[in-house]
Length: 262
Image (cartoon, rainbow, N blue to C red; front, side, top):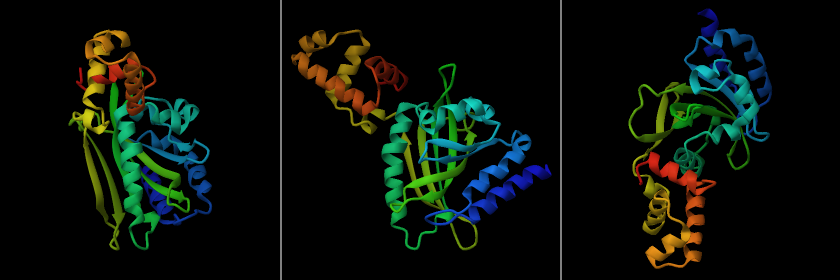
């Protein structure tokens, strides 16, 4: 277990050496980790380093399949963007359009901010090859940010929470390391995953259309029943697709069924 302890010491030292705007030699962090591949399989979490500028995993520990259900090579091939596309659509919307926007605004208000002392974390559901979802927990530090404090390079870990986090909610947190080295929770948002209609800002008429589509009705049939024009129904369907970030109404129906809207 000595190598495993060395791994944790390595991560701690790397985080301590992180600069606020740029990081010199950050490539050394993930290059050195290659020597610990054989020991990382002993850990209950996946370590990752991502360069968002080039949409690439700079490092991903080899025990990936044990945690997120996809092998190291599969994750490296798909890259961070396609990996995020495996998030449950609702979770992806909450994290990218809600938490990240609000969180960055909150961080910007901190005086004399030291990014090496900021840790961001959130839960999410990841689609598996069998069609089910795993509940995962991701936390990361920002190794490099731009002038607007948007993350450019991040390093963190992913843990499987499927067996212990069963409540229908998604939580997002920001911790800041105090002078004594302890991590204080300075921000937290908990989003309900059952009250999803309100989260997506679907109108009653849009929800009505989803239920009609679930029953197999065409736009023309929905227009006749609701006394609206076909053009109006088509426009509302486009709005639904945009709000839910779905490609087709079939995707919408699947999402609606999973969340109990129909």
